Figure 1 (tube, rainbow, N blue to C red):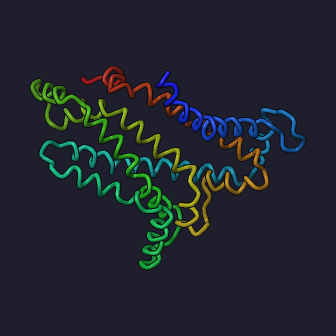
Figure 2 (spheres, one colour):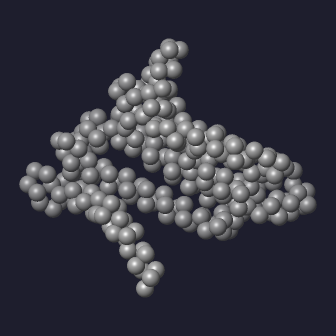
Figure 3 (cartoon, rainbow, N blue to C red):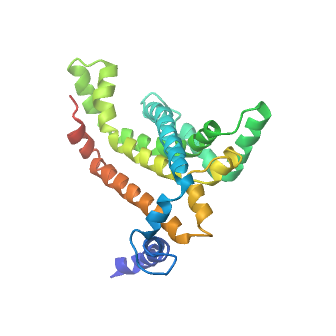
Length: 261
């Protein structure tokens, strides 16, 4: 009884600020704004007529995939070496990577833009990807760090005893067992990257639009179409979470599905 009482505030919070907003998104996504009737395809048909949507989706995919790849290529070595036994400055390094998150991201983006303006960098897709990578790199490092930390070192020692070189042990043991962290990091970077709008506005001088910008531009004129796009993104997020959870059972999914040898 006491546990239920203590959980009540959390349940109320989740209902008001998570479940209710999601329910409203679903309601607006399937209501035709022209007559207020229920129509599952009306808003999606209207979206198909939007000429700018194709370019927005293309820009979003390019920015999201590029950001995810860059964050993975940068974040994995960092997380890997932070877990090295001989590395005795873990707390300091983790604090340095998390320190930018203590500063409002708008201030960070504006400061980065100011630096680019001083050195004469042209604002566009490249600077947007840089800003997104800068913003979301910690969200890749932390799940990778915690996942690699959980890997039983006996697997790596066993691979060495069986004749595997350090590089082969890394690719055949460490990488497959860290797959939960990789998938979690990609999910935490990819979805926010394609749905952000403030970063794009600042780092491209308003020349580019991602899905987040497109949704923001629609919210005043067509809340229903904005909800329809949000619904599609929710589906992609749900699929990502299902895939991630499949491998994210304390490493069981990676070790069973990845295959060590």
